[in-house]
Image (tube, rainbow, N blue to C red; front, side):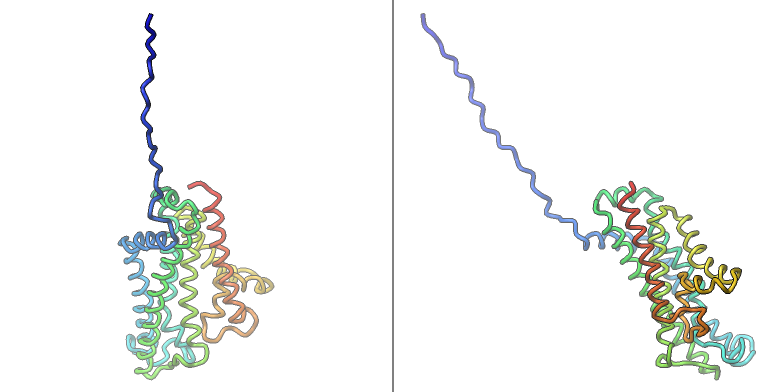
Length: 286
């Protein structure tokens, strides 16, 4: 009897390919570039920036023309003798402040309203670089526009006042440069606060209401209705603290903080908003 040995077929060696890492690494520069593209490709960004520039420059020139009597024949220093010319030519920064705050809130909350934030955070799991990039892009775009239009309003406005024989100041006069640049810092800082509130509250309407109502109008309203005994506390509110570095000659009565303290307090408020937004972004689901 013959015995046949059956040899099982040899299984060929199969090489399992090892997945390669993507050559593209996630860096803050790439996150920053992404946020920059988002900002500059939106029509609303340019409309907001143009509106801010027009408000600051145009209203400043109109106020200077009115103060010089060029528009109504009232004569130089319309509005009363000794009127602060810096306050006159920077009149447009007051309505522009509202636009800057709204623009910041839109940057922070817009992606939550559209749902795009899920894709953004899926691409950047660390999350905090997204907040940092949004803040940096917004502050760069807005800061440049606010600075340029404020300088135009100041120098053009002073030229109009000077031609009419009204009171003027120069850049080198005491407190003038600080007040002008302080106003730029105030508007930019308020816009950054808007970005932080947009991320924190995740609502366009809610963040705008909190910024305009709580940060801009509440301190002024509280100062008007509360007794003088509250002044020691109220001067630490954001807009009241900013008064110390946005005016040429701050009130020396003690109702307003000194320039350095006011700048530190206002910066602390902005940083507090950013920290709150960072904690919310890290701890809550998109």
